[in-house]
Length: 208
Image (cartoon, rainbow, N blue to C red; front, side, top):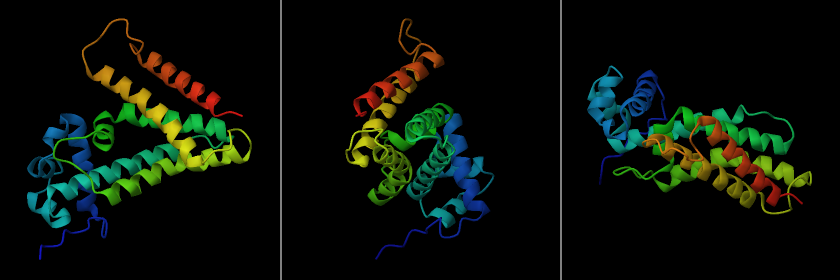
């Protein structure tokens, strides 16, 4: 029988928090390749033993970083305007964009395939529900008020999320590479305008 991996969230003490926040900071500064147990511990001002005692292994540490990323995303989205449902959907999309632009490396760990990191299905389900669920609830309100067509609110949320995620991912990839003059994503303003045009087009398709 294998040794059980500690659950870092059973007792989120200051050391656990320091390691997760240290890993997020290191990820932002040096990219995913820097997320070794030794470097994370050093960046947090702790020893490697602290990582193993709190998480058990590197995979569990990365899972904690992944979870924390979605917690931060949910916090950003929940701060969106609580006006009418359609404007709230626009606010949620803007919040999603702001999180991605402000945290590109963390966003990449959350939504792209990184070699050596594959969060478990249950964690992926929980974190997705915690964030996509905000969009589902808002879409459901819009449907009840007759502002969107009468479809499954989960499907409506997926359509809105796919548009948002696609536009933002294109923008992040463009920004991360060498400049390509003449691109429709040349500036932050252009990328933001493109996202909102894409969203408006999607919402028109969902309007009765």
